[in-house]
Length: 30
Image (cartoon, rainbow, N blue to C red; front, top):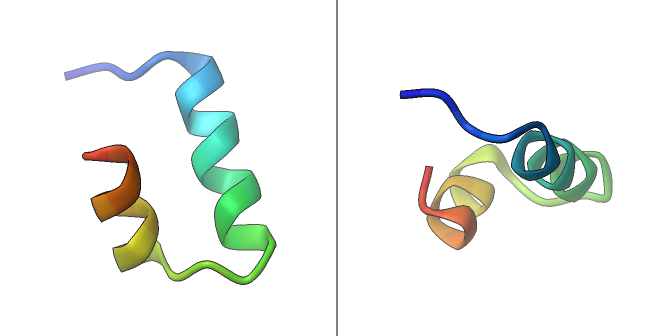
């Protein structure tokens, strides 16, 4: 399943700002 570029950017920004990948996955349901 493909995700929108906007969603990817938000997830990447979240992780770069100190969020964990697991938290990002849960937060954005990916």
